[in-house]
Length: 172
Image (tube, rainbow, N blue to C red):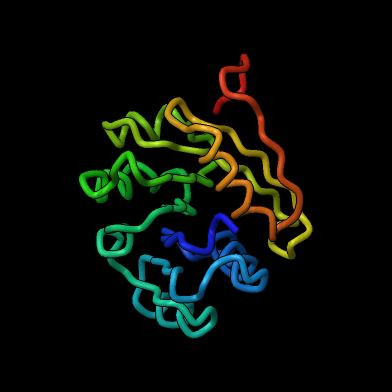
């Protein structure tokens, strides 16, 4: 399985970030010790760590350093702040998956200031109970292997489809 040897950082262990962590752990697709998350508050981090049995930090820089996959599960208004905070640590060898609504992959790529593979994932609310649908949109630097990795990550939450990059008005 393609995720067995991957380390994953979930920036923003809220509803959707938490659902993703729970789905990955329940599916057995990811080792518990390969997952870590972050939240903006110490008490929330402590509760999330107890709930999921993984490290949950309040330091995004510490979280993303050296991880294979970085999942941005933050609100759109926090994307620029979080990416600016960590961008010097993010490399083209990592995969960034963004769940931020109304934030095209081009915007993420622009903030990162280097050719990092980005895949935008748009999960719907039924994903919270693993009965949902996620649409994936690859960014300019994402290759087929990155899309397949993203597909594997969202598979435990329900169905997944890929929308081809470069389609008119796709907002990817």
